[in-house]
Every structure is written in C-alpha cells, then in structure tokens.
Image (cartoon, rainbow, N blue to C red):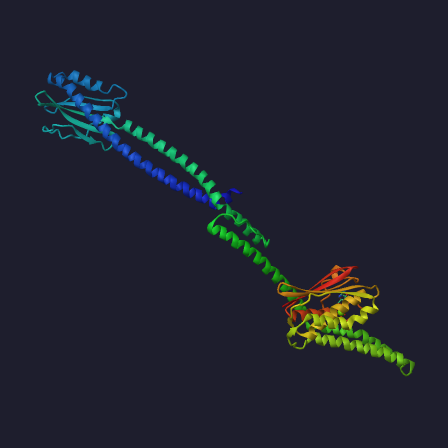
Length: 473
Ligand SMILES: Nc1ncnc2c1ncn2[C@@H]1O[C@H](COP(=O)(O)OP(=O)(O)O)[C@@H](O)[C@H]1O
Ligand SMILES: [Mg+2]
C-alpha cells in the first residue's frame, strides 16, 4: 500500500481518532493531577515557611534583646548557607522599625521586599506572594517570653523546588501520554483492520467490477449490514453481468436490423443481382438479332430461366423489405417441422442424406405465425441439404424445451462455413451459391426477431454447421 493511501485509509483514520481521544483524556487527567499536586505542594511549602519563620524568630530574640546586631546577622546568614535551604532572603527590625540586619542568598533576591505595613498589632505570621519573583514572603513579630513584641522578622522562601517537582511530574505525564497515543494508534490500527477487512474485500470487488470484470463475487464475511452488503454486492454483480450480456446481444441484433433496413444497400444489391440475368437475356437477343433468325426453343428456355431468376430475386426482396404484417397465434412447432420434412424429404433422398430427428413427446406451443415459421425452417433445412449436396451426410433436427423457451437445432455434416464469413451469412444478398439469392438467412433472422426469438449459427469449415433457433414459450 502506498503511504498516501495508507494515511487516507479508514483504518488509519479510525485509529488516529481513537488515539486522539485517549490522548485528550490522558492530558486532561494529567492537568487535573498537576493542579492538585501544585495545591498540595504550595500548602506544604507555606507550612514549612511558617515553621522556618517561627524558628528563626525564636533564634534572633535573645541577641535582639541584647542589642547584639552581629549575632542577629550571623543567625540569619546561617539560615541560608545550606544549599537545600528554602530561605533566600531575611531581615530583622527592632521595635522602632529600624533595620538591624539583612541577608540574601543570591543577588536577584536582594531587592527590597514590598513595603510591609509594620503594624505593631501584628501577632501572627503574615504571608504574601511576590508579583515578580518565585517566592513567598513571610513577616512575623519577634516576641519576648512575656509575649511582648521586641522586633520584626521578614523572610522569603523560594518556590523553585516546588516548580522543579511540578515540571518533573508534568514531563512524566506527557511521556506516558505519548506512549499511550503510540500504543493506541497501533492497537486501533489492528482493530480497525480486523473490523474493516470485509469492507476492504468488498472494496476490491467493487474495483474489479468497475474495471469491467463483471460477475465477480466476494466472500460473504463480517457481520450485520456489512455481511448483507457483501451478499447484495454479489447479487448485483451477477445481475449486472446478465444485464450487460443481454444488452450486448440486443445491440448485435440492433446493428443487424439497422443494416437490413438500409434501403440503399438493398437497392444496390437488387440492381446487381438482376444485372446478371438481364445481361444474359440481352446477349441472347443481340445474338438472335445478328443471326437474323427466329429464337430456338433452347433460347426461349434460357430466357425463361433467367426471367424466373429475376422474379425470384424481386419476390424475396419484396418479402424482405416490406414484410406483410404477420398474424400471431398458437403454433405447434412439431407440426411446422413435420411439414418442412414432408416437403424436403424427396430432395434428401436424391442427395443421400440421412435424417435424424429428436422430439420430446409433448413440446409446448409457442405464439407465432405458422407460415412464417415454416419459412424459417424450410430455409434452414434447404441450406443444410444444399451444404451436403453431392457428398451426402446426416441432417439432424432436435427440439427441446429449456427454461421458458423452446430451442430447435438444425444440424448438418456439410461443407461448413469459414469462420470469417460466419458474421456475413445473415446479411441480405450474401450467398456463395450459383443460383442463391442470399436472402434466406436474412429473412429467417427477421422472422425469428418478430417472434422475440434468437438465432445462432455455429460451424466448422469442412465438417458441418448447426443453427440454433430459440423462441419463448
Ligand atoms: N448449413 C449451411 N452450411 C454451409 N453454409 C451455409 C449454410 N447455411 C447458410 N450457409 C451459407 O450462407 C449463405 C447465405 O445463406 P442464405 O441466406 O440462405 O442464402 P442462399 O441460400 O440463397 O445462399 C449461403 O450462400 C452459404 O454460403
Ligand atoms: Mg438459403
């Protein structure tokens, strides 16, 4: 599968959708956890700060009372020596609000603290967040044993350790989230492929049909609507093939019919056919004229023969070009065939042709015109006899009823038709016989059409021909 196609596939999209949902859930849950953790940590930091402030306040009380400013400074400096110490700034004021000592851990924490309201009435720790620095500010009174305020202590503690912990947690959550997305896509892909397999198979089938491979069927797998769809697809595919075959057959007939009605072609054909006998008659007359004789009985006989030929050609042309409206009725094909056999039997005898007949006991009747149908089978039987003339053979006539139709096959062991002429035999005026009109099969085809039937010819050159006619019951 090409990469672009893969990204476009439903399987991929479904798995991405699943993964996105999982990821969104993971991140939301992660953020909630982070928020709670932050609150807990802030709370912890504040109580630690409060503890440190109270401890420091206790430690500076004695030196403050003794006016030992040096000790006060060393105590507050000492409180932030340790690298892990949270205290980043501290200062101490005396009772009269004058600065006794101050210390900071880093330059950036050295900036003066926001102005505190050095409220003398302050009895407990006061806590503030800084607007710019990541610190909490604490202020509290330094009190003597007699609960008397002797000064004030201010200190700032860093939020950085808290931030570090939060950043660590966040990183972990995102890593887990990414892993879940990846696993989600993989699992989703696997699941989607499994679910979509019937659709993929169906899709292949549709593609094949689209490429003209009609009649393909896909395995009916999957469940529910998909399974139903596969079944319907198979039905459709088969029906489509039937339809297209029917259209093709109809088209073939249409082309032929169209050809038949091309009057120009007929007229040219007729003119051509008539020219030969006319020329012989003309030549005879000229000969008689130049000999200055009366006509001999033989001449008259020739002329009569040629005139008959012209008459035959014109008759069949007229019958073909302007077929009389035929009246339909119930016809027993068996009677028709019996009639045809009676007429042609003497000719078969002359040509040493053996007749093989297969009839079921009762053949259903069809709707048709007796004389027209007789014409059809007379043409076919005569063609068969003519094909075996001078060489003998077997003429087979088989009839049978097959699903809603009856079919009659006229078979001979005559000379056959070369394959390249098979298409032409139904064309008007196509003949290979000296006295032929070439109208027999053309008319036969037309009559069969009028009976909503079909006609097919099969032949092996040098071995024989079989013509199959089918009529609906
Ligand atoms: N059973 C057959 N065996 C061999 N050729 C045949 C057979 N039926 C028809 N044909 C060929 O088809 C041509 C056309 O037949 P048809 O239309 O009946 O005209 P015609 O019999 O007057 O020639 C014939 O001339 C012959 O070449
Ligand atoms: Mg014929």
